[in-house]
Amino acid sequence: MSQEADIIIIGGGAAGCSAAMQLSLRGRKVLVLERVLLGSGSTGRAAGLGAQLRESPDETRLLMKGIEVVKDIETRVKKEIFTRTGSLHVASDPERAGELRSFVKMGKEIGFEIDLVDAGFAGRLRACMRSDDLVEFCYCPTDGHLEPSELLSSYVELARAEGATFLTGSPVTDLLVEGGAVKGVSTPGGAHHAHGYAFTVHELAVGGG
Ligand SMILES: Cc1cc2nc3c(=O)[nH]c(=O)nc-3n(C[C@H](O)[C@H](O)[C@H](O)COP(=O)(O)OP(=O)(O)OC[C@H]3O[C@@H](n4cnc5c(N)ncnc54)[C@H](O)[C@@H]3O)c2cc1C
Image (cartoon, rainbow, N blue to C red; front, side):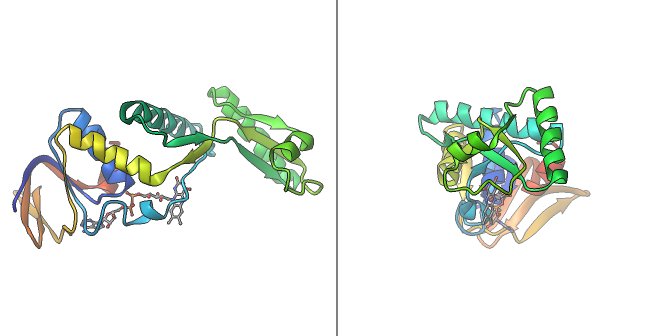
């Protein structure tokens, strides 16, 4: 059956469902079209490692913000999604050791909890780890593990509560273009029209959503 929405999102993985939640919370009427089942792509295969440290300050800040967003979602849905475990980074040669030291400097500059630790500290954290050939260690106490299925179902629950619609078994087969603008999409079950804009999750990421 044909549906109308402000925004149509193609793909019901972590990116599509998270965008659906954020847009729905901002008052947009959202329709998510998923080819198979929600989470049946990469999202259903993710290990759920929630490590925030990246090479650039901006990427690290983005991941720090991501953990904050997940904690806010946990409060809203009253579920545990993120388990804080900490993460240990190791170097076995001087070049990598230099990289770890520059990560620590960068992390501290942007307010990310990170520090160099010694072999004794690392050994107590990971008792089964051989460390006699390692030369540098750093520890990020706020990293952890995310439960991918709980995160996805929470995005969907919060988006649905704001009126979002999720259609599974609905592959998008074509874009409906009028006057040079995308106005909707085609699926085997019928056409769906967007008052605002229809985009793929990849366009959303590029567009800064
Ligand atoms: C083995 C593995 C381990 C991973 N571990 C981690 C980890 O520890 N930490 C981490 O942060 N990331 C991890 N990732 C990466 C993470 O899973 C992905 O970055 C994330 O799931 C991508 O989400 P997505 O929504 O972009 O893509 P997907 O989850 O793939 O969602 C895309 C969806 O679009 C649907 N779709 C495609 N075409 C159409 C169409 N024409 N019409 C309708 N629907 C369509 C697909 O069916 C799919 O459900 C891992 C990935 C894998 C494979």
